[in-house]
Image (tube, helix red, strand yellow):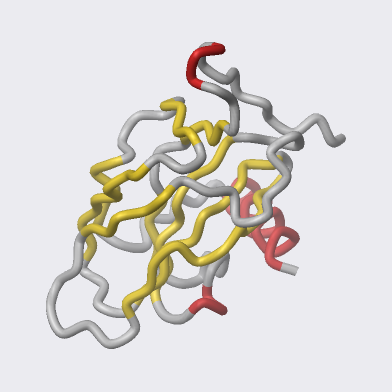
Length: 147
């Protein structure tokens, strides 16, 4: 179970006091936590990475772990450096009433590698996924209330 693996890795890393910087790279957009993105909006996702074979998954922040929604983008046979993709904001079946906070996680390799922190990866800033009418104002973050 990927979320259990993530929790276990985080606990072991904290217990050992080790830091983990697996790959040089970064997300350029989104770059600041807390932006509100409305379902159906078009976004350009921009990043730098030295990897040539990778997937980008949409993850839901659902403490104490995270949940993978789906793969938003993949490059499995790179013939050049792809550093951006267009994405229509969507929840991929994630339950936004549990948490509407999402982020992208880029992992080396195939879809099955999403969440495997023994591989090289980078993650984006978090953003709020909203299905509410823009006229009603910004959606506040709803982190998980599960204990």
